[in-house]
Image (cartoon, rainbow, N blue to C red; front, side, top):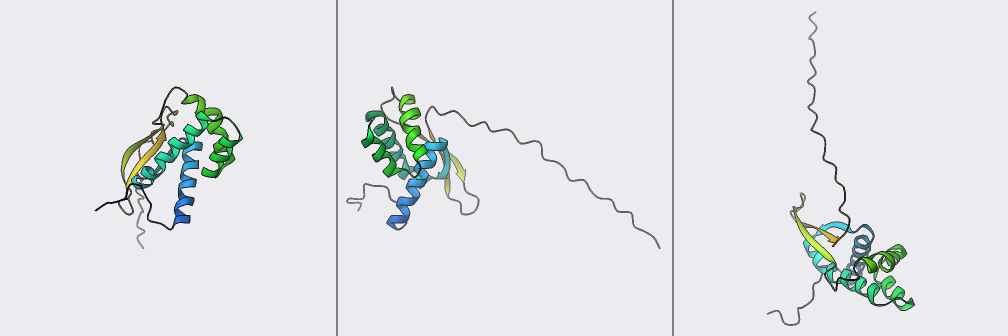
Length: 143
């Protein structure tokens, strides 16, 4: 039975899980898109919504302190208050998107791309055609 198992958790020690979530949250806010595992994305997604909602709702020192408690970098707090609060002013909730991208090669973990909605799409240049290896022809010396 699943009594009182309503929250998403990571299988780590509490201080390690907090540190992982703070770093992941900071990366999503700064870079607006991150590739991570499905479970980590499920756990950090409500935190993204909460931080942006705080930035939209409050514009004082209390908001700065609340956001700085949840992120690792002052620039992430500044970006929430200056950029993201205006971008999502008309959107009530749902600030993040999770898009599956396949499995990780090493252990087969399900990977997703966690990104902010309405973010500028990163420009991914198509790789050039694979270069064919030139065969080395070695002339055998006859003695």
